Length: 470
Ligand SMILES: [Zn+2]
Image (tube, rainbow, N blue to C red):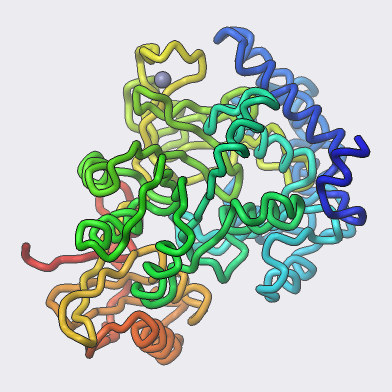
């Protein structure tokens, strides 16, 4: 343990505990070799323990479940929404010293990205598919499980020698993302760099919210062997690579945060000449599913339960696309998420995957926002990645229910939700600032009277829509 402590850097930071990390690594490793039935049994055992803990330690769940018998099954519990959990935040959490106000103070400070709250907890923010801001707090056990799932199942590092081999090969891992917020991905990268300084040169985050030319220059200098980003940002970087501005030779490209479409995968793969793999995660549980060689997403179902449901909240069969999905996080105790409505549409596959994994395979219909193409200040076009634009409006203007629609080259129509109409000036200002930074030329920003229009079939809000004729 002394070796582990000297490799890691935070004597006062109990969010990293080498013993817990080793225990989680062993549990995840063991779980990877279980059959389907044993995986389900493990999840059921963990769910029972979680429910019983939540009933005693969380005033919110104690009240919600007060009329239900002991030993009630997960599937018989009421679902909970983000709105409910955020409204009753201080009663949901299982430690009185954690409060919504404390979290808000913590996330207001961008210098604390990747730091621990009270030296113990990871904190991530998200808007998710509903556009409502959420705060998610994770204890050290949960962080250790996420790290182990990511390392062993997604990256295929099953042993110390695998890890050593990768270090010897000199992998350089670059994450390109919105870096100025407490988002799960970037906070995890910064946490790794703080906890393991010897790894810091091999793991770096690059800001997507900067001029494309600067990003290209930084990536060319760093020469990453693994590049992790959103699919739409990967597509933008593929354009740069094809044009000869970027000169990267990555071993793999990883995507997350949005659904990776097949045309995008093919294009990125062609431009960089390497494998592209996707993962499915959320601020509520970071590594929900990983992609296998058959390009199927397998759910880490020994640690996270996903229940696909229809509009009325009834479970749908495999092969049927769900309206939403209820998530139960079996790893985290500080803010229990039990049958939490995540909002994504998923389809559980009927047949077993050819890769032989016993973990269920799913398809996800997540975010489906478009990339915008705006006129450049020096001619040409500037590609604007939807997640970057959304971050600008959320963080810079405090807007969450909005829709940005591009119908012609230099014109953007902005639709704001009823509660956010007063933010028009801040929205315009935040967009202007962002476009200046990104070398976008003149763009008319028109604030429209109506509110955002949700998709009729799914009820979901597409926040960045490109309707340019192609
Ligand atoms: Zn598979």
